[in-house]
Image 1 (cartoon, one colour):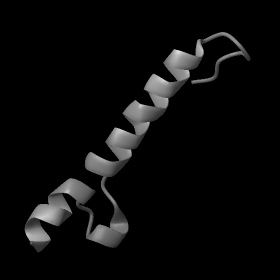
Image 2 (cartoon, one colour):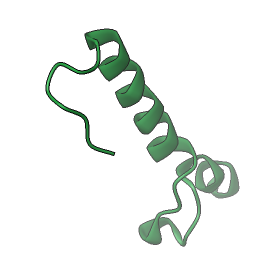
Image 3 (cartoon, one colour):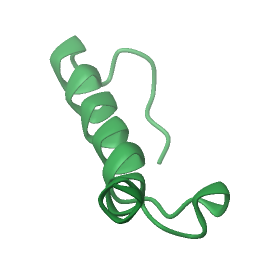
Length: 46
């Protein structure tokens, strides 16, 4: 999704980055973790 420069507020940018980082760290499957999400991998490795 592309947006034009200054079409969203700084607060919205921060919220979108936070949502992406949460997704990346908790839900996105990663090959190097055997196609588990990091959160899943941590609970199975412990």
